[in-house]
Amino acid sequence: MAWKSRKTASGPGVRGGFEYGGTISTTVSGADAVFKDLAELPDYFERKIIRKAVREAGKVGQRAAKKMVPVDDGDFRRSIVVRAAKSKRRGQARVRVFPDANKVPALITYNKSDGKRYFYPAIIEFGTQTLPALAPMRAAFDRSAQESLDTVVRVTNQGIDEFYGRG
Picture: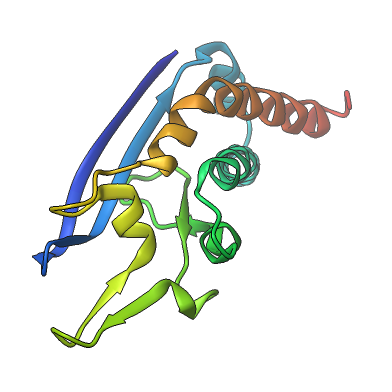
């Protein structure tokens, strides 16, 4: 199994000491025998099974992240969602696990002194000039890596068994 994690900054950059728009990209690879069996299925079923497996793995990361984030009033925790993401490569399925400001608008704070908006989860994850980064999302994904891979393998095997009528 290979597990890589990297932090990248995207978006407009640093404003008023706060970095926002940051992402953590994680790649999980492994379980080659399962994916070899999966490749023998028709494309439609292969995509369907992969999407389901990746979504379930995303839910594992979501549960881990909800356990790790700091809780003041619970807004950050409630905002963590799993959403399908577009993939540029054919045959790949991606999901995003992230705090969604549309779900909990209270996560966006306004600073009256400089008139700018700040995204609270980004402050917690990446830190500021004066506040160190806590990185609860990154830690959660690092801790749930093996469980996520196990989930992908289990759900993929279930899908293959269902296709062949063994489950």
